[in-house]
Image (cartoon, rainbow over the protein chains, first blue to last red):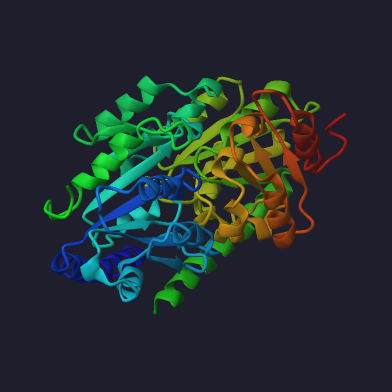
Length: 220
Length: 220
């Protein structure tokens, strides 16, 4: 009984995600779904890209959180169109919430839509949002064992960001263990070492985002 | 329809949690449910208490993770009875898993049962495990905004541990913002500043655990 209900919820979500995907494709917008534990630095990674720009790419942002509009306020401060989705305690975003949020954007004027999911390494993985790519973010203080212990996300990620590498000198983080675990789960996904504090890897991060834009005529 | 199903799942869980609670009370065992984001340092906090001991208290541990027995191996290395519960991708522990895990312990010989939930700030809050107390753990690199953005856990916690305070010099962590947010959600819960690396706050941490033991005759 329980399994059937979950399957139905996922089926309904998948149908809505297909509609979101169609709507985004029609407007030539690429959507990136950011999934990570709470506090891995997703919002700061997005701020980093917005602050420096990505070759004239027009970016919109959807911020998902159980509560507050703190993250959306940070994005709005960078003059970027943003919608805050509060899940009222819910543990992940779903396609129906994205569908509703899309109404607030002038999609035809956008190239990239960055969707920051609720901080959670488990539940968001099961819910397609109609995205083009999925980014898994892990920060070094979370420990090198996260991909092994929470493998679901890493199997489906198009990119793995290892964030806060500036903290490595103060941690017992075994980077070889981390890299091997990711490679075993997902041999194809690039691993980007990034620090928004020191600037390390930010060039590669902006380059990757730029490679997601559908129409190459838009960027230089 | 969806809400009814969730209510049923929670009702079944609550009934099983009451049985767990009864079983633990009969054996005079206190159970602590550790809830946090992935990588906040729950296992290390438990190791810290085990390594130094708590006045002769007999401790057992249940480790919850989607995958691997990495955490249980760390606890077993400290000669402590431990059961690893793998949720096979599930995002939280439930009372039926605890009920099953209890079979592996000689409960009458234990004083304290430490239950490390799956790393997740949202879902575990809804599932009673029959515990005596709930500990919320937040580590400083996760950021001062976590209680405000994920308020559910902080409303019901008996103790809030601010972990990894040794990293504060390398972070933009606004401790006043953090403390005010916790106080607003839960005026009664103590906030313990802890670092397993520097040893700061470990005395208070062991003291709090000791205060959870039911029979004061057992501890010195």
